[in-house]
Image (cartoon, rainbow, N blue to C red; front, side, top):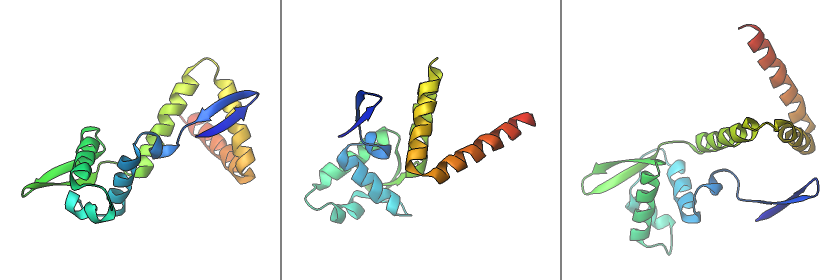
Length: 144
C-alpha cells in the first residue's frame, strides 16, 4: 500500500484503477478475458492459471458475472463469458464517481487545488492540455 503525505496529512492510497474493485484473482481473470476478442470458457482459461483449480476459476467467473462485470451464455453444458465493459470503461466510471463525490461537497476548492498541483507535478504539457479543455468547455457552454 502506497502512502501519500499531502499538506502534513498522511493518506494510505489503495490500489488504483480496476485493481481497487477486484480481488487479485478476479483482476487476473478480467485481464485474461479482456485480452481475448471471443467469449471464453473456464477450459479456455485454465492453462493460463497454473496452480489454480478449474473449480476456482469457474467460481471466479461466476462471481464476476454476478457482479455485472461479465456476460455469459450457455454453450452446450458450459458457460462462455465475455466482458460487459472494457477496462477503460470501468476505470473511467470509477474516476467519474470519485470526482462526483469529491466535487459534491461544499469544499471542492482543495480538491481542485490538489488536482492542479498533481497535474503540474506529473507533466507540464498536461497542465496545458487541462487549460485547453477548460477553454473548450467554456466556449461550448457559451453556445447553449
